[in-house]
Image 1 (cartoon, rainbow, N blue to C red):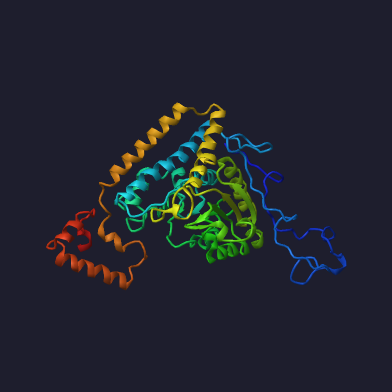
Image 2: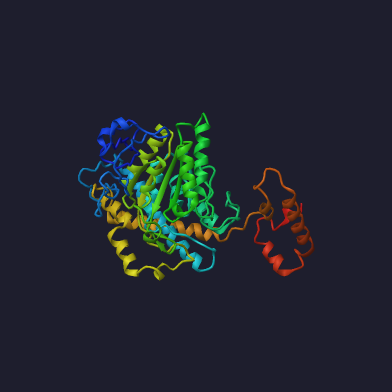
Length: 445
């Protein structure tokens, strides 16, 4: 079991100065000048500009527990996890690249239309999932399938969504691949437009706060990349969650690139963490390739969310080893050697494996057996998924509205009329209808 930490000294959360801060501690402050009517900011007589959220103008620190060789950093507090829990963490971390390798190649074969990998971000995703409650509401971006897998979403369910077959119970074949959703697992369906989930998460947090059964029990957790944080929706979500306030946990994956734009060209300030205090939000920057650091940071961030009922932000510093998606060639904007070096020097899976080996919890034989088993499991699910039919054709018109509006009814009736006229006499339509579970018959009922 994980232990609760206070992190008053060890974890560098950034706070906005409290109202009770003594005026006499600030240079140039005269207590006799007081404050202005609309603020608690002390009045000063000396002109002074600032460009840092740290007192001495230094960079915001990054919290770490394990070094690159899986050895605990001096002074770091290692969370109390059992061997069984560590093995579960490691298996889910290894499952992500196994899925990515196979589904990436499946897309290249033309069997699915699109795919996005999680290469290099396994610790950030699985570590966050492990620190959350399974019924916390999650609004994800593209690379958080690991949260679902941690909560019990099956490999078959992953394949069903990517192939859009009749076992895709959430999207029913109508979403792009990797746009997962699961009401059972409190995982809101992923949207394609960038950053839309951020203000939505603030709204979900507000709903949780107003729910007597879940207030002070659950948080709304939103994942996004540093590229999404360049969108206006990021600021709208931060402002809403901090001003109302709501128990919304902002988890930023700073993986270095927004599609083809490096983070150095996205912002000039001290990364995303510097923005948190501007909204009055407790903020921490953590080594996103260190799963134990991520677990500690997100556990404490969630505790603060629930205790205060306010938003908290965690910035996880990592590196996108893979291409942005199957529509991207990242070697057009970064060198191959840079990527290969990151795989070897700062691999989150390797780091945690070395930690487990140092405790006698893992060995080379178990490593080979795990990789072989996961590959077989994923290939079995893939081969099964590609043989299954699409959902009933009538599902094209369901679930969006509680009551069917006139325009959807009109479109449904128009398609039904075309099927009656051409469905069995025009060969392309006749062949395509066979791929649907009901062969289009239920639409004609």
